[in-house]
Length: 119
Image 1: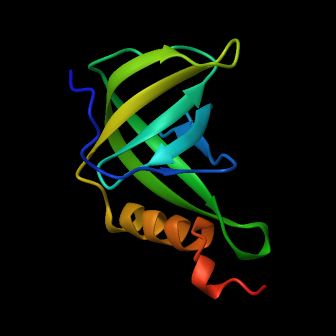
Image 2: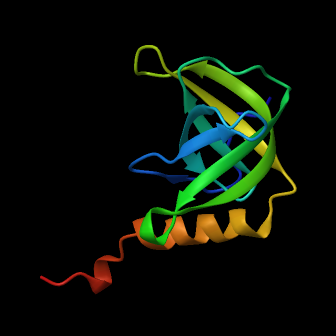
């Protein structure tokens, strides 16, 4: 298992819920994202080296949602600093185009450019 990050990850200041795509049951919240993976924050540890069918439900206009379906392999799972929570790292298999668009939108929305700030 590698410990050094090769891809820049973007932390999410608030969380988007992640669902089991088969059962439509919530399994946790999106902690951070990268081009090839994501971190899930959940109340239970996740099984390592197992493929999960995930669904991200992204808020859209007028209270609607659009879905991003993913198949992802859990690479690691460990206890979070918050009691009764676990962080798990996933590698997304063949990320759909919508996943890349989500990363771009989150990066744009949550980025801060000090040159554009007014004093």
